[in-house]
Length: 367
Image 1 (cartoon, one colour):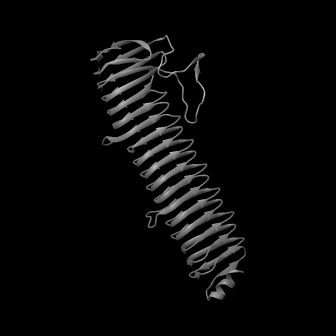
Image 2 (cartoon, rainbow, N blue to C red; image 1 turned 90 degrees about the horizontal axis):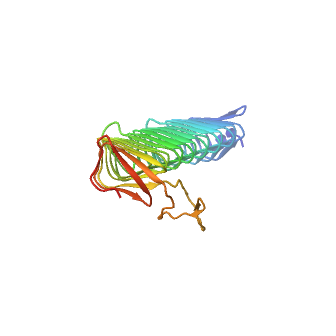
Image 3 (cartoon, rainbow, N blue to C red; image 1 turned 45 degrees about the vertical axis):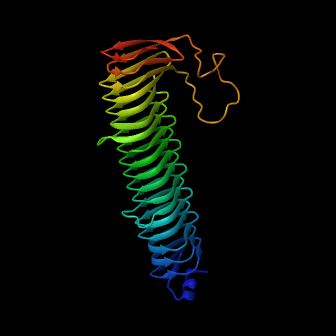
């Protein structure tokens, strides 16, 4: 059935020219499908609309679904229920409850969102501005770039760049996360993370380094972890800060428990307690800084098991590994530059020596 026949039976007006079906200034009450393109202007679509090669909507209200099985969907100044496109979608000043792009990119720009979306997904990338989604926002193979938007959970595979956004949880499965002037509950990334003026309760980087900077007032975090290094400026951490395999640098911070590998450098910073993993020699630099409690030194084993279950025994140099027992006879060398350690220096399951340089002070004992 052609669009002329549909409109004639409904007492409406439309036309079909070449491979394009067009409806203007009318209501389409039934479902409609075409092998070509579909265009609607200033109209209401009450049924499901499917076009194979492409779809253009301008000032359209769609009550069900608009679908493009092989091409792209473009919509301006429209209110849509469900959008499904294979090769891409571009939405401008448009609200939609569900948006799905199965193989292409999604570009969505709003100056104001009246009706929040329930779900957003695109395979090859997203560029979002002024978007609000109460459900999941997912990019399964590409990167997400978003500005002035609000999300619940937002996930991308290859990277994420957010500016002035809010999210309960932001996750990058294989790339890095960059955020400026954002607010989170939790952030997760595999290959690295940079946060500028973007508070969160927890921040975790499983394989790369983590950098957090507050350029204005100090910001508060609960738990911070970066595998290959952590750099902090003007923040407070109420629980723990961990750099499992890398150095830790903190400037103008107040931290609770800190852990690093090989080197800790604090500038005008207070930490309640510290732990340093050392393979041979380690350094603690306290530039106008204080460790209020103990500094614990542990020999680094460089063993990381991210998940799963080992039913047998782990061997190191032919010996069964016991995390609570030292298997090394090495003497670890620790150099401490400046500052004050109010607690003890404790060598846990290892032995070592300490050199105090540049006026460094230890109030407790070296055990």
